[in-house]
Amino acid sequence: MVWTDRIDQPTLVLNAARCRANIARMAQRARTAGVSLRPHSKTHQCCEIAEWLRAAGVTGLTVSSLAMAEYFRDEGGWKDIVIAFTVNPRQIKGILALASRCDRLGVLVESVATVRMLQEALRKGHEEQLPSDRAVTLDVWMDIDTGYHRTGLDWEAPETDILALARQIHLAGPHHTTRLAGLLVHPGHTYKTRSIAEVEEIHQKTLGSLYRVHDILDSDPDLPDKSQLPLSIGDTPTCSMLTDFGQDVSEIRPGNFVFYDVMQANIGACQLTDIAVAVACPVVAKQPALQQIVVYGGAVHLSKDRIVDAQGRTNFGKVATVTEDGWEIYGNDEVYVKSLSQEHGLIHADAHLMQSVQIGDILLILPIHSCLAANLHKRYQLLDGTELSAVHIPKPL
Ligand code: PLP
Image (cartoon, rainbow, N blue to C red):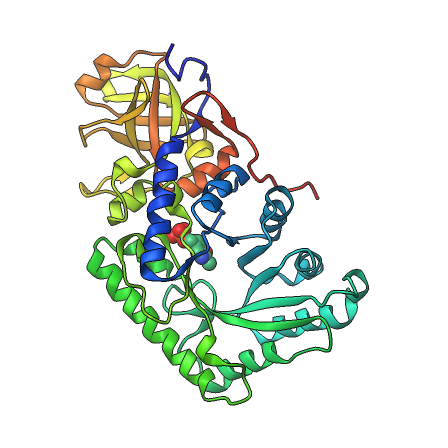
C-alpha cells in the first residue's frame, strides 16, 4: 500500500518532518542572531503547526487578519499576537474585544486618522463592552515603508509627519489606551532578488531607513524610552539568507519558511528538498503529440502564482514523483508545469515521464507559492495518511 492510494482529487500533502526541520532551523537562526521569532502564521493557518512552533520556543504569532487572530487565540490559546495588516476601521470593535482577551495584541498603523479612531473607540464607543476591571492596552506598531511600497508611512516622510503619528499613538488615555509598540517593516521587495548580495543590499537599506525614523523619534523628549523601542523586520528571504539582522533589530516575522516553495528556492532562500508541501494530482490524460501530461490540479488548487525560471519559461510548479515515503523531485528541468486553468494543470513532459507515468497515477506539484496553495486547500494530508484539518476557516458573516 502506497501513501497515495486513497488520494482521488488534488490534495495538499505535508511532509511534517521537513516542516519541523524548517521550524527548528529558523528558531536556531533567531537564537543565534539574538532576536525573537514571531512567525507569520498566515502561511499555515493551523493550530497544530503553531504547536510545532511553540515547541521550538515561539511565544508570539503574527497573523494577517482579525479572524485569524481570533482563531489562534480561541483554538490555540495564543495570547501574544500581532495582526500585521493595516487596521481596518470597520473591525475596530472586534479588535478591541480580542485585545481584552489577549496579554498583548499588536496592530499596524500608518495614519494619525486611524490611531484617532482606535483611541476614540477605546475611550467611548465600545468601552462598555470592554472589561472595566482590566485596562486594555493596544500595542500599536508604526508600519514603515522602506521600499516595498505596499503599506506603511514612507521612511522619507517629513519629520513632522513621523512625529505626529508617534505622538498620537503615545497620547495615553485614562484607562484603555494605545501604546507605541515599535517600528515594523515588511521588505517584500526581496522577492524580486535572485542572490544573497541583493537581499543583503535591501536589508542594509531597510535598516538605514528604520534608523532615520528612529532618530527622529529619539529627538522628541516627550516620547517614551526610545532606546527600548523594538524594531520588527521579516520576510522569508531575508531571514533565511542572512545571519546578522543588525544589532537594533529585536524581532523577525518570517512565515513562508515553515513550508518554503519553488519561489523561495528560485530566490536562493531554500533548497528544493526543503519544501514541505506538494499538491498530489491525479493524472487524467497523456498527449504525446503535445509533449504534455494533463493532471487534475489547477489554479484553484495551486493559485496562479508563477515564476519565470532560469530558462526564461513561465513556470507554475515543479513536478515530483511518488516515493514510498514521500516524493522525489523530477530530475529533468525540461519537465515543469507550463500552464494552469481552473481545474487542469498541463505538465510539459519528457519522453521518460510520458512513458513511466500512467493515466490514474499521482504526480506531485511543488507550489510556486505555498501560502496561497495552503489557503486554497485549508487542510493537509500527512504522509502517514492522517490529516490536519484544524485550519483557520473564516466564520460566516
Ligand atoms: N510580515 C508581514 C507584514 C507580511 O505581510 C508578511 C508576508 O506577506 C510577512 C511578515 C512574512 O513574510 P514571508 O511571506 O516572506 O515569510
